[in-house]
Image 1 (cartoon, rainbow, N blue to C red):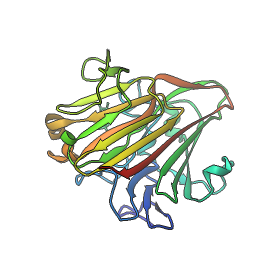
Image 2 (cartoon, protein in one colour):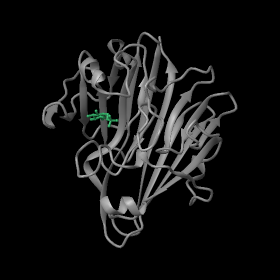
Image 3 (cartoon, helix red, strand yellow):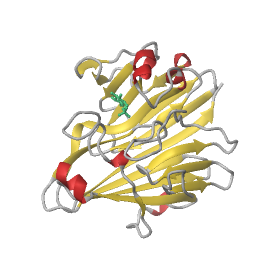
Length: 288
Ligand code: BG6
């Protein structure tokens, strides 16, 4: 299918009726729904669906830079580019295909990208939906240049939540984090689950591979499982910053929370010919 700007989209549907919608714009997942049709990802009512704007919501991929930690545009260029469907990707492990519906996408650097980031790469992304509704994103990034390069990556996942005051994150207790609101200074988290009462913009370092978001009001728990992605970004713009973003409603911060599997503090370096793989698996279960 195509969106109203003529950009291709792919809809995955599992036998039970869960679905995911992926846009070629950014290789971005724009929707992930349960078999009951409930949307699990947040997208702003003010989102702009025209490249080179990145879409405010879903799961934009920040690559090859996270935020403004480098000379590129904020969060790198991958989320602003048109990806293509990869009809003949190199094989993955059979368990990555068995019982899943999936799509393979590909991004390569354009002449224009090479001017700002002179490293030829192939970024293969598989998005798959399993029979139980789990959404998996597997990224394979290959250096096809003759010199090494380094990159950062984040799956900037906008979870749809009932109310920011009613959710908590477990799995980040006692970790060190960089706080973007304090000149990227390093702090250490306390022993309690993370709750929200003001703007948060942090990169938690070296977390374990399973993080959970509990939404008490909606009685729903999201689980994030990650591999190759040591860091976790947690972001909510709160009231003031929301008002400064043109593609975000003033009150929408209450219904979203970004929690990203990421590799930021220690960039990943690839030698010529080398490939890196990172995985993110999202699931949701009802909770009491
Ligand atoms: C966060 C950054 O992860 O992403 C924030 O740390 C930023 O500083 C936010 O505001 C959203 O970024 P953007 O470019 O999509 O507006």
